[in-house]
Amino acid sequence: MLYFIKSIFSSGFSSSSLRRGKAISRGAKIVSHAGKALLVLSLGLLAACRDDSQTEMNNHSAMATDTAVKAERWYTQEMVNQGKPLYQENCAQCHGGFGQGNPDWRKPTADGRYLPPPLNGTGHAWHHPLDQLRGVIKHGRGPDVPSDMPAWGQKLSDEEIDSVIAWFQSRWPDKIYQAWSRPKH
Image 1 (spheres, rainbow, N blue to C red):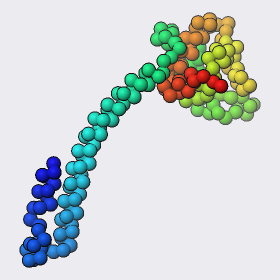
Image 2 (image 1 turned 60 degrees about the vertical axis):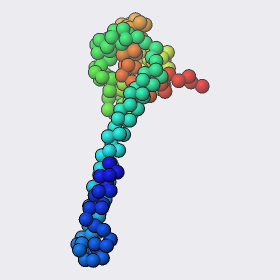
Image 3 (image 1 turned 135 degrees about the horizontal axis):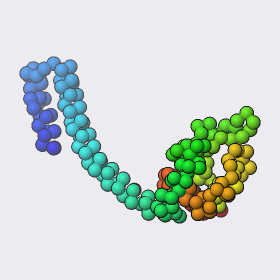
Image 4 (image 1 turned 90 degrees about the vertical axis):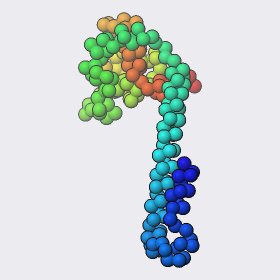
């Protein structure tokens, strides 16, 4: 690569040939050298991009491995699988099929009640401990928040409620799950 760069800059333009008038005008010389510099810069960037992209792919692989280790979850895949149809049947009508919630969940309605929040990690559910999530599903309403959340304790068993929570928490990004699972002081 270095040989190639040297050959670009040494091809046909020496200071002695410029002084003798054998080369092109001063303005053309500047343009010519600028063009060569741009070519060299472009080649350097391409080489750097190729090397960085490989490094970046390796870094992403390492981060994925690190993240998987850090985000050990309390539930099993079997619970997630059981929770998905339970969620779809009982929760999706209000919270959305993917746990996306109502877009206006932060704004109170005219009567002061709040619409269903997202459960996919983009809302507020991750601020609440597991027992509180269980209680809201089992007994309805939110803690100190007026809402129309019905009580599901008569329809869903404790195991089914845990499976529903497992399903929507499985949709939480690792960073959100880690923030939720950190010990609270």
